[in-house]
Amino acid sequence: MLADQILYEDNHLIAINKLAGQIVQGDKTGDVPLVDLLKEFIKERDHKPGNVFCGTIHRLDRPVSGVVVFAKTSKALSRMNELVKGRDFHKTYHAVVKDMPPQMQGHLEDYLVRNEKLNKSFVTRNGSQPGAKLASLDYHLLATSSGGYHLLEIELHTGRHHQIRCQLAHMGCPIKGDLKYGAPRSNPDASISLHSYKLTFEHPVKHESVTIIAPDPWSGMFE
Image (cartoon, rainbow, N blue to C red; front, side, top):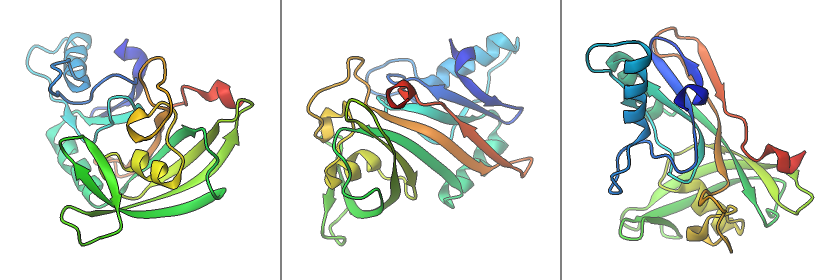
């Protein structure tokens, strides 16, 4: 199955179209994470006798689908981590919401506070509150379905915990299926309708622009 999920691969990087429900790194559930599945897949496919290196560069929440990039060498991992820290790792998401946003496009800036116990982020008006971090994104409306759902494209400028989920909900547009942030019902497969659609960055070794796109899983809704 992993072979069908590969979106991009060279000697330094491998990008996967993560399915909703897969975890990127190990968690308390004990389920096998995508990074370990990839190591085993590469080891068997390439007939590697020793351990396979596969480094996690960034993460997606378990119910979210879309592009995730892993490093195949420690050198690539180090350089990609610097890109992420320097915000030279550009993320575009697509989200399906039931409620029409207040504007066709807009810029959202909020201070978020993470509650570890609830595994949830909250918007706070007090930017000086302990743990508060500035969250910034742009959105615009791409399409509306015959069923009344709206497809938003989101350019993420910061990488806060549950940022898109929290900020869209605070705007009055919880993501379809996202019970934690106010959606009225869950999706049948326990996913939420948030998808990492596109990543753009400079290749850590070749120093050329790379754009990786994962097609929307719900594109048929908006045809």
